[in-house]
Each structure stands twice: as C-alpha cells, then as structure tokens.
Image 1: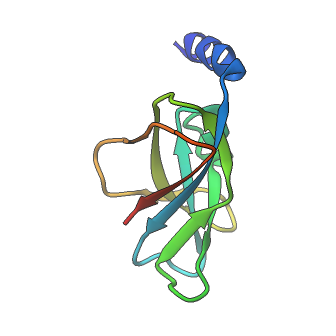
Image 2: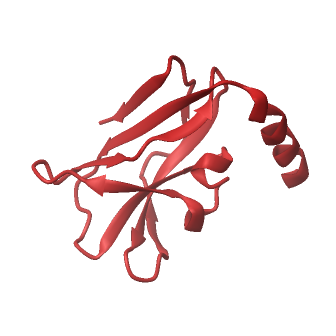
Length: 116
C-alpha cells in the first residue's frame, strides 16, 4: 500500500503545483506545544507527524495558526489533519478533535485554506 502511494505521488510530480497556506483557529494550545498540519501528500509528511508542516502562532490573535506555503499538486485531492505536538520532543500530544480527515483540492497559483 505504501509503495502504491509513493508511485502515485511520483506520477503526480509532473503536475502543476499550487502554493497552499493552511490557517487554523485552535484554542487551548499550551506554550510548550506546537501545531502542525500532516496529510497524505509528501509535502505534508505522508501522514508521518515528525515530517508534518509546522504552523506559526499569530502574534495578535493567539488562537490563530498559519503555515508557510507548501506546494501541492493542482486539482489533486489531498487529505490532511492538524496535530498538536510537544515543542521539545516533537511527540504528538493530541490530534484535532474532528473525526474525519479534512480535504483540499488545490486550484489557482496560491491558495489559503482557512479552517476556523
């Protein structure tokens, strides 16, 4: 199954890419914790939380977290979730409470995904 996923990811390497920014509002993140986005795409860590994309806490609205841009294949469904990790160890503290995976279909040249 992992080999199939890697083969599909390799084939999509020739697809045009969209620069995607993830924005998530999350209450209750402690000072020693970080927020990350992890997903099916290699750009999102291929579901490996240690390779997930870190989000940065907004200086004004502390419950708002935003990622740097990551490149995802144009018009290719990508599943993802947010995870809270210990800042020092990188260990998962908790996954977002949402049961189902989130999905994004990247379009255009730049996309901001707002999950409030």
